[in-house]
Image (cartoon, rainbow, N blue to C red; front, side, top):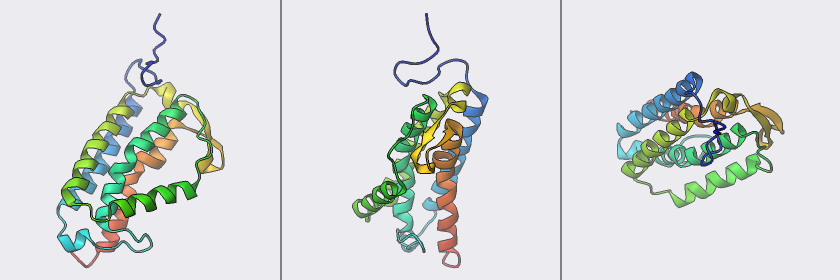
Length: 177
């Protein structure tokens, strides 16, 4: 009688997906790389403002951890074949600005704890996805309502997120370390 779909998550609970495991592993590798760099920073480096972004290194590290639950929620939505509708890049920028204002004085320990906890939860959620979930496509308003797969959405958001910001942080700190 089981359909292979968990009532709790709404995603496939069939055989483990090797692709999902690989995606989760890549997300964890990026989060660890970001955490390793962040833990090595001086207080001055932690407070360095990232050019063309305006946020400090510390706020950005916290931001990556903060965004994982939302990114995973949206990926699961796509994995169920449900569109992401009405979410715009202006909404994303608004979330980021509000987060930056609320967490301007974030401590290194708080940011690292959030990054580690939420990246582990995100990786676990990705590993729970089946190949059918990863292959399912739905319109995504952030991408002009193009019907994109759950796997693409994960790669473009949750998996890429730490790598994207790590590169910008490294560029901002180049010469100051």
